[in-house]
Length: 105
Image (cartoon, rainbow, N blue to C red):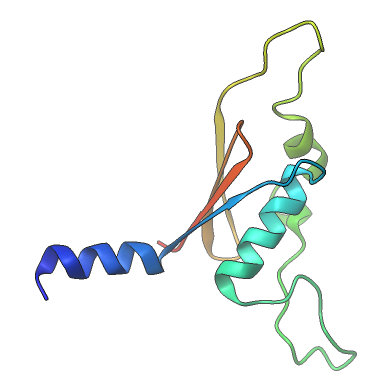
């Protein structure tokens, strides 16, 4: 295996891309993407708390602000851009097209 092949595989294992469903908010998409990437539950699975769950998103970023970030008035063009932040040890990039990219750095 060459070094470039090794780096390519590491990149694949270290990044996860998720596309938001039409009826899903960006904050929900972030939670599901990080959950899928890390293998952690979205909430504590039992009363003992033995299943490791994600930290609340609102401890990192305001979910309502994230959800409204790319919304515009109906008579205006859609806002274009990205927002990046750290959540549960991952770098999360959300873009205006509904893609959520989760990276372990």
